[in-house]
Structure formats: C-alpha cells, structure tokens
Length: 367
Image (tube, rainbow, N blue to C red; front, side, top):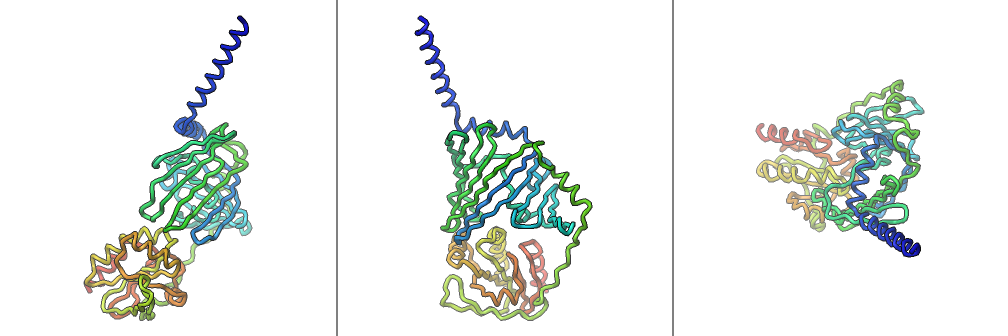
C-alpha cells in the first residue's frame, strides 16, 4: 500500500512538472519581463558592443552605462550616462539635454540630443532595456538552462528600406532581465548586425550612481560655449562647376547649368536623415518643376545608391560626387542642401532638410 501511494505521488509530481513546462511560453516570459521591469528604476552594466556593417567593417567596443527610467521624457523615456572604454569623454542625457563631459579638463558642453545615442557613450546604451517590441510579425521562445531567448521577426522598415529584421533578446531566468540583445537586418541586399552583451548588471540601489549624481559632478565644471561656425566660403559666390557622371548611366557626363533655380542634395546611403528626406525633396522637384531643377549627389556605395533610388521611386537626377567637389562645397555632414540662383550664385546652405528650403525657393521664384 505504501509503495502504491509513493507511485501516485511520483506520477503527480511528474505531471505537475510537465504542466509547468507547458505553461512556459513566450506570453508567459513577456509578462514576467514586464512585471519585473516595473520594479526597476535604474540599471547599470558593463557592455560589449559589436557592429557589423554592410561594407564588411566591424566595430568592437566595450564600455559602461547607467540607464534610468524617466516617464516624463518625451524623446527617449529614459535618462542615461555612457562611457566607452577607448574614448576619454563621457556622455550624459537628461530631460532633453545632452552633455559631453571632459573630466580631465573639468569641463562640459551641451550637444545636440538628436544624435546622442550615436555618440561614443550613447552607443553603450540598450534602448529597449525596460521595454519589449510591441509591433512584430511573430515571436519565438527558446528555453535554455539558465536563460530564455525571445526571437522577434519584425516588420520591414519601409522608410529606410531595411528588410529581414530579426531581434533576439537573451533573458536571465531568475529575473527575466536582458543579458544580450542582437539585431540583424538586410539593407539594400547587405547584412548588418548590432549586438550588446551585458555583464556586471546592477539594478536599482546596487552600487550605481544616479543620473542626478552625474549631473552634480558636472555642476562645478566649466561650460564650453559653442563657437559659431564660419559661413561656407562658397556662399554668395559663383557656384563651382559641376561636371559629373550620371549615377544611373555612368557613360553619360552631366554639366550643370543654371537656366533654372538649382537645389543640390548631397547625400549618402548610410545617412538615415538623407533617406527620410527623399519624399520631401521629390515633392519639391515635382511641385516647382517649371522653375526648379533638383540634383542629388552621392559619392559612396554606387550600386547600393542605385537600388535605394529605385526602391524610393526617386525621379530627380543623381550624379556621382568626387572628393574635390565635396571639398569645394565644404561638405562634411549629411544631408547638405544648396540653392543656386539663375545667375549661378550660391544663395543658401542647409544642414539637414527643413521647411526653410521651400520658403526660400518661393521667395526666389517670386523675385
């Protein structure tokens, strides 16, 4: 009788374990992640980031970051401090303000927050450390001995023509916190990978300084005031001759003339703001086609540039740039736009697309 009871108990335990095993699905893991991260206000970690680019180049960097929830922040939803090991300057973001800190000189300067996640310190930050993707095609769960893997298949990014988007998060079993985040994608037929591997993770009050502590540190430092950039040397002068090969037909050489207003768009394939602005530039090209000629100039990755223009249905002419031309126009950031009037004078320069371009075009057309 005692043996019989023992057998029943064994079967019940095994059955219970199987039932628990079956209940561990992606929905369960996601719910546990959300539950646990609700209790987290701040996390600090060492990080090893590897980026593999379509060109075949590989970035391999290590550093440290502190990420702190900030529900009032309208840009990221968090504040952060970041330091890359090979770079002496440190980076801080809080409530819409970006800081580049130089401890050796005991100084800091305010920087543009739109690109702060691309700064050396910002590269150490995992953006979705407190959140999981909510828009995706499907998600697959893989269970290993000490961790869960959530493998997301994401929708294509039609704005930047990025396909085959896959994101894998490795979560610790004990608290469902991410220890590795890998993003893979295909951009214009070439693969790209970004991977963050976290270690020495400290949550909440486990020994990390807060963002307020870092801000207190710089409060006694000198502020480096921004210097006003000198005007481009070609402004209000006759535009340098442009005689370049047609991107779509390299056997054809195009010499630009100024029988109309001319809008020149310097761009590159790797420049996300360039690609995002294409529809607006295309709209200007069509809207003012009688008075305006729009020319795109791209210097790198010709084959990828051709694919991108076809995918974006860009109709305005694009030419292949040269280093000499970039030097003549002092182009060292993208996208860069110039308006040249009918007399061949360079009238305006724009660092990035803005509504000012159309306003200035309308004014010149009316004159």
